[in-house]
Length: 252
Figure 1: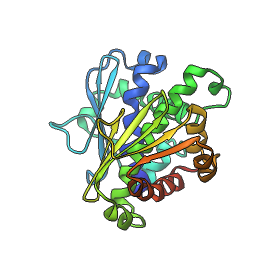
Figure 2: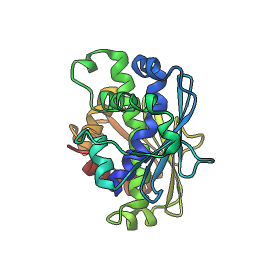
Figure 3: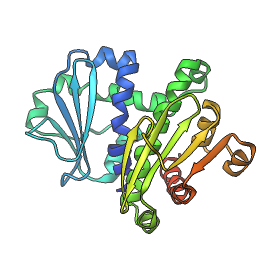
Figure 4: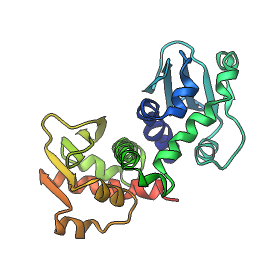
């Protein structure tokens, strides 16, 4: 169930960013002007993607009206679909049936998530694409920490003990994301924070990417200055085990 929440709450919303960057998605959804809801049976978790002529806006939780929806019978099925381990399709509601032509292309749209989150090594040779992959992975990390902190019983006590504050994760001269923590609840946002209480800064894109991929000794990186911790360190120390737990769920 936690992994299902990660797929709907942390990974699926990245289509906002990828649609604005990726020509394949732009070509596919250029004429779409309607929402598609992805939900687990029972209605929680649920994320709705609002398509508007080439752009995508993700809405988590309740969405007004009766949008076209794809319902997954259980968390295992949802995870299998997002991981490419099944060819079966979720159940469409009546409004979705009337969008059958477009829904046949949803797999093509979802496939672009893996294209940038688990890119082929050759793709990363392009500096612009590499920078974009780091950016969306940074966002996925921020969104994922929220899902882990609020819904994984193994680390929920850690989240509840975290001091209130805003923690920013950023690449020097590059992308940033931040987390607002208040009474054990988290709000993840793209971009830099106005007045962060704590900052985790990567020296460059390569350092950030290697950290996200688990290929960097974080302690050694801090010692060498490739990763810098600033501000209210107890906030970052509390987030660190949440990062480790997130890596556990998203690893192959």
